[in-house]
Length: 137
Image 1 (tube, rainbow, N blue to C red):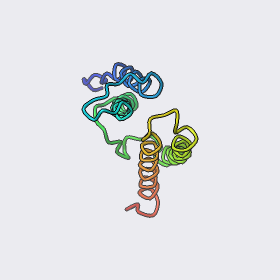
Image 2 (image 1 turned 135 degrees about the horizontal axis):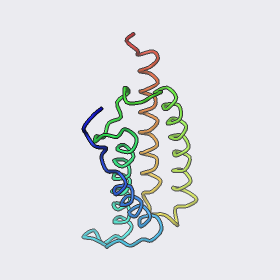
Image 3 (image 1 turned 60 degrees about the horizontal axis):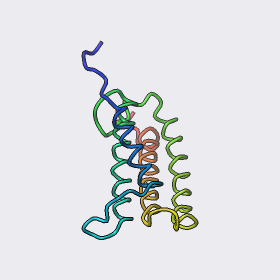
Image 4 (image 1 turned 90 degrees about the vertical axis):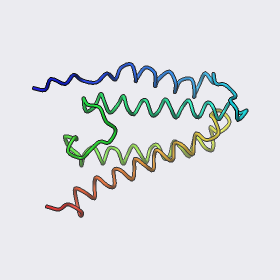
């Protein structure tokens, strides 16, 4: 058994939730030097999402880090298929956020959601190819 303690993730998850809640619903943000409150809300949301990713990584793998190597997953093929579906769903949500909900959300919301969705699709494609046609075994 390892002497290394599980890294703290609950505090990070709480901070992330508060920042994302503020960016999406509360809208408490300074105008900043760029004199644009919606840009500040977007930055707050990005920081919250980044902290949320770190909290998720720590909670999922019980270690510090940022990159989910293939050997850390219990069933990489199943997770990659789930991630592909989640990425496609998020891509659809980004279209809705950029069109129908544009008046209610900060302007770059659809663009940022589509960026995250495409990264999820890219990563799941990499995992599926690494386990399939590009497997060295």
